[in-house]
Image (cartoon, rainbow, N blue to C red):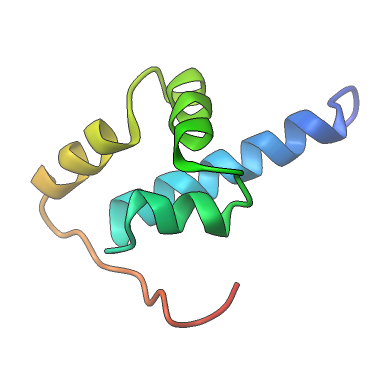
Amino acid sequence: VEGTSLIKLRQAKRFEIAVDLLSRSRLTIKEIAARLHFSDTATFRRAFRLWAGRSPRALRLNAALRPNRRTVDTTRSR
């Protein structure tokens, strides 16, 4: 995307994957943080709160309340 830095594109992709995993998988937040190459869960939580305006847990709880939610197969490597 023209005019967008590589760092911003990477952050956007990490956020997209995080939302998907939080919404549709049973991975722990620690496991999601590791998959997205964050140094620890605190760093992931801070970044997620900046991206989404809420915590990963809040997004996950909200997703659990929505009907017709499919879980994603987390055994496959990405």
